[in-house]
Structures are given as C-alpha cells and as structure tokens.
Length: 275
Image 1 (cartoon, helix red, strand yellow):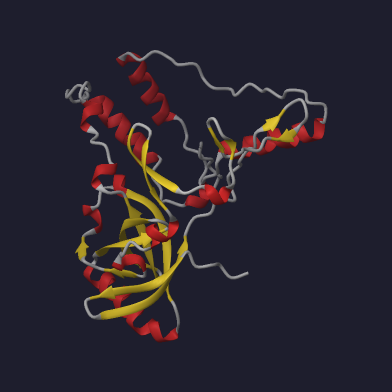
Image 2 (cartoon, helix red, strand yellow):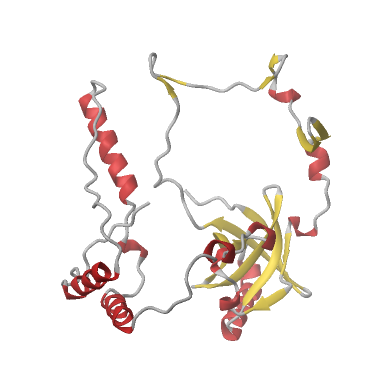
C-alpha cells in the first residue's frame, strides 16, 4: 500500500513553483502504548465529555475556545479558524538560505520526506535539490500544517529533499541558567587524555541500525510472559543496575584507566539503545 502524503502543495522559490508532496519520515509502530483498564472487570475505560453542573454533552455541541481571563473564553468554530488567510497553507516559500551548522540542534523537531508531485514537477525539483547541494545551504520557510504554522528547513536527501520542522525561538529555553553552578576549572591533563583515548577507542561511523530500544524489547518480553502465565502473577525481575560508586578523583582516574584497558566490544555486535 502506497504511503499517504501528509501535506500537498508547492514549494516556491521567487517566481518558480514546484508541486510537491510531503511524507512523514518517522513511524510510531515500534512503540508500545497502553490503555487504561478497570482491573476488577478487565474492561477498557472510556472517557465522556462532560460539563460541570450539566453532565455529558454531545460532540456536535463542542467548539474551540481561547481563555482570555479566568473562566472567560473567546469562542471560535472550525469555519472561522479555517477562514484565517495564510499564504503558506498550500505554499512553502523559501525565504532564506543558511549553512546547516548555523542551526542549533535544539531547534530541530521532526523530519519529513519531500518528493515531486508528478513528472512535470521533477525538473524544477531536481534543479532546487542540486542547487542546494552545490551551495551547501539549507533553505528556510514557513508552512501551515495541521492547524499551526511551522518554521521549516529543507536540504537534499538522496534523490529527494528532507524537510525538518523547527522550533521557534520562544519555544527554546536558554541553557546557561541550568549551567550556572558548574565550575569553570579545567580538568587535569592525565584525566583528559584518558577520557580522549576512551572516546577514540569507541569512535565509529553512525549506523542507527546498530541500536535497539532496550526498554521496548523488555516490555515485549514482559507482555509475552504475562500472556503465557494467564494467572495475573506479577513478573518482576532484577534490572541488574549497578550501584552508584564513589565520585572522587582517585575513583575517576581508576575507572578511566580500567575503561581504556578493557578490550572494546567486537565490531558488528548489535548495540542496544536505552529509551
């Protein structure tokens, strides 16, 4: 079954418009989600829309409201919201080009794939892709998606383009306030050299396929055991987590030396990433 486009419209660069389709680049099927269950009956809990003093209400009677003060709302229906004119609703205009390293990783939110809508759009699409690649730049623009306008960055990705939604400046906290109490003293050279050696030993090209979510795998195992038991017995196993050790310089030095002396794991072995 062909993937369904998340968004359809056009990318505009000056007077050039390129019909495109945008697809989500990530999937949630690998995650495990839970439902809330009424334990005595084993049935799933459902939720009703209720109004204090009135009780359950019909979904058709529900509209959106923005709270302007305690208990006071400006009410808006879907037609009024949809009528808000945003040129970016079906057009992504590229307004600026920057070097990729200029965008702090804090701002990146979610990735999407961008492909030409049809054969007629391919030529202009390829020109844009190769121009970005040659200039080594990332394109910026704003795009209306699912009820909000997103700041987005676009860059070449194989034969296509990768679009990443970005957080706005007011959505990102300044980190320095969290780091104020950290001392500015530099570490001792021997400690720094040992840590650098350890990093070099464990350096390798990034391959996401080498990592697995250990938490999800453990949950799958727990679910399988519970399903097999069928008697409601709790299954609690020792996680095997190490106890916190000392934190003085002597312990740090010994730990670093032991880490460097230990043989690294064989290449090709599957590493697992914690959730």
